[in-house]
Image (cartoon, rainbow, N blue to C red; front, side):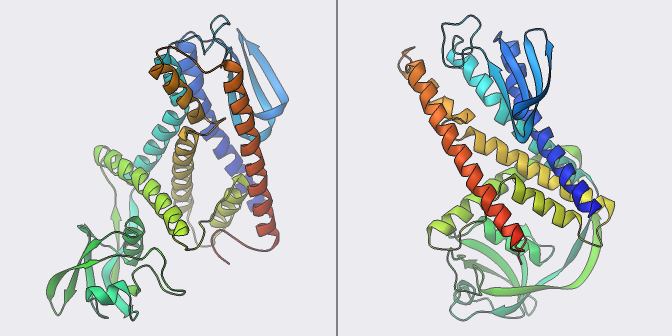
Length: 362
């Protein structure tokens, strides 16, 4: 019980740090641009504590899942040193600074992960079963085939196969399989909506003749691999949504409560070393930070990206702005909708937990 409580507290602190990084991006660019910052808040009101430093109030608030930077005149350019009174470029930089900092944080965390030596299970990835009428059968794959590479990527174990397939749902792939000592190039297209009980390609694979090897990357290589990992997360998320729209299973959506549950479950898993838990935490932090970056840059009212269409209209109109009251109303309505959605997700998370469910299955 104590371990679970500590893990949940650790998750809240982790999320708070990622939000702090996001808001710090807005804060420092605004300050550097001469915008007057009234408040830098961690969490959402009611306020628990605050201290005034110069013209800015630094506060800690009761609701931990969020944060904000309150600037003078965010929509009204008439106020001195207002955000809205700055040029389109300056406002774009202030707005984009938050998501940008989360993206940079994700890149750093992924790069660190790839630099840390990790034990990897390596062996011969072998096809055990091929479903009748599946894309694998149509491509000519047979039980006993060894999958050597997928789209030019060599495979270490069966997990790599699933990962590569998840990146190319509905798209043609090139597999090199080895049969009777001979390599063959086969083309296969994973399904977006496979039959119940089958995967996207219709195969079951296993890894034979396994061994453990330790791997790590040089910093410059790890950074490049970090960019690739970020792109992969975005592609997999897009494919999950596409699969859902094609009539497949809806992607699992979780708010902070659901993510905290997952963090606690993984952290409590027996047999994990301290290093394993650190790696899991780094990976989760990187994915959450990237998710914050992508979500906040979407052109939805009340989000950072929701201000970008108004900047675009102003830029195209050569300085002609949308009336500040209208823009403010749009963001207020958007905030109400987002808070309502967050509440619904929180209720779903709580009901799933009370029913013994988990994002990890079961």
